[in-house]
Amino acid sequence: MTVLKIPFKKRVALELFRVYRKNTTKIHELTYLFWECTLRCNLSCRHCGSDCKKESAVKDMPLADFLGAIDSISPHIQPNKTTIVITGGEPLLRKDLEECGEELYKRGYPWGVVTNGYLLDQSRLHSLLNAGLRSITVSLDGLEESHSWLRNNTKSFQKAFDAIALLPTIPDLKYDVVTCVNPRNLLELDQMKELLINAGVKYWRIFTIFPIGRAKEDSALQLSPAEFKQVFEFIRHTRIENRIDVSYSCEGFLGDYEGEAREGFFFCRAGISIASILVDGSISACPDLRDNFIQGNIYKDDFMTVWNQRFQKYRDRSWTKTDDCATCDSYRYCEGNGLHLRNEKDGKLLFCHLKMLQKT
Image (tube, rainbow, N blue to C red):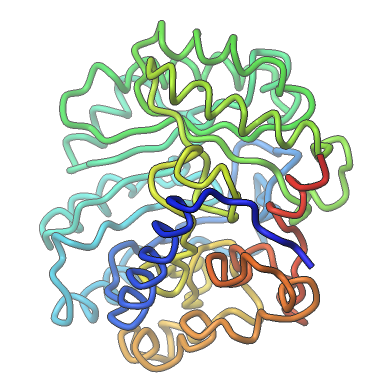
């Protein structure tokens, strides 16, 4: 049994947040839609959750098919309140990305991309901005040697950093830099912080790597309990320092670190306010959720019908209260962790943040 040791005031705040989470789940307003536009990628990262390759066996979804799905959604929502995030694979490999952006802009949707930065030079960035780009996320996973090791490309660090340096120069562009922490780059976080601050970066998001995708077979990517806790001590200290806006990703209940390692409290919004259209047309929540989490397909189903009628698995998570979760005092705040950390076949939890933190 996992027992929480959380100060009284924070526990009261968590209880109030539970009410908000229940109301949000009941309304399930679609605010983020991911489009996995390709499984092709120009890198071969050690930790890739999608196992993307230079030449994918799955063809890119035709733009017209995606826009058809968007047009079926538009009458049922307010487009300006739903952000479309284009991901992959590496979305910048698509030559029609700007055309897609322009069409989304015409329809009133704010849109953004998630990229490894390798192809993002000044010319491409301005081309995307002219097509209505509103937000962008670029990955930087350590200093040069560590980043290149994780990304399996010796040029990847400089390409990514050059791309990142462009972002603070663009007025009104929403952006962040994301870092996947592993044992090789953990001790570089302070140097990375200074590097980003000196480049003018204001927003930094930190992930930890979990045993899914390629990372499942690579123990060198997994943090020990002491290293895991060190990540959150770094985030807590950096947030107090207030020189750069750093936060932990949206996954995992963190016990006493809640409200200190990220803005707000843990809330897995998959299927509650977040959906995705995968490269083969599958309708899911976060792009990481595949197989048994898929609820339909745009080539045979109406997206909004699926969203409103088939996402019960995401909105009633009582099925996750098994094994360690069944006796955990934090379940009322966590509801079984991020769904991408559950086995897609039997639903068992693959990783518990709180349990990991309590091992130290």
